[in-house]
Image 1 (cartoon, rainbow, N blue to C red):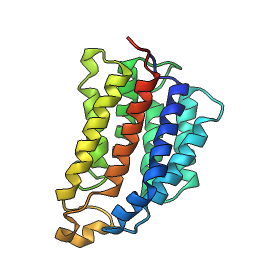
Image 2: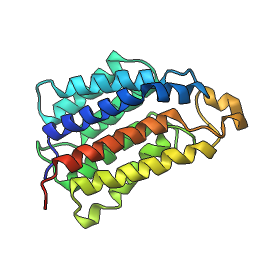
Image 3: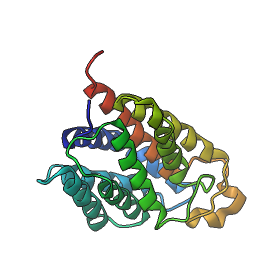
Length: 212
C-alpha cells in the first residue's frame, strides 16, 4: 500500500472524529495549566485540515493548502505549529504515491519545519513530547521496509508514551511555565491531542492496508 491523497483524507477524517469526541476532555486538561481552550483550538485546526484535503490539487499542493488553511482559519500556537507541519510535509513530496520510506521522509520534513519556529523539545511539557517521539519511531523503521500500518502503529505507541510522560514534567513554555512546579501532575493537552491524532492515523492506515 502507498501513501496517497485518498489515504491522507481518510487519516485526517479519523483524526477529526477522535478530536471531536475528546474536545471537552482536552479543554479540561488545558484548563489546569492554560486557557482551557486547546480542545476547541485543535478541533478548529483539524476541521480546516480535513476541508483542505478535499480541495483540488496534487498531493504536494494539497498539503500546502492544508497548512495555509489551518494557519489562516484558526489562531494561536496550535494552528501555527500544525500548519507548519503540513507545509513541511509538502516540502518533501515529489510524487502522487509514496512508499514507506518516502512517507517517513515526508513526516520527518514536517517535524523539521516545525523546529524552525519552535524551541520546544522533549521534556518541555508541550505537544513536542508526543510529536518528536512519534516521528523518531518512524525514522527507526526506515531500514526495515515497513508497511504504512507498521509505521503509524509505531508512531501511535511512541506518541502515547510521550504524552503520558508529560504528567510528571514541569512546563517550560507558554502560560503553564508561570506555574513552575505546580504544572507537574497534569498531562499536557497538546501532547494528548497529538497522541490522539496519531492513534487515529494508525487506525486509518491499518484499515486501508490489504489483508496479507
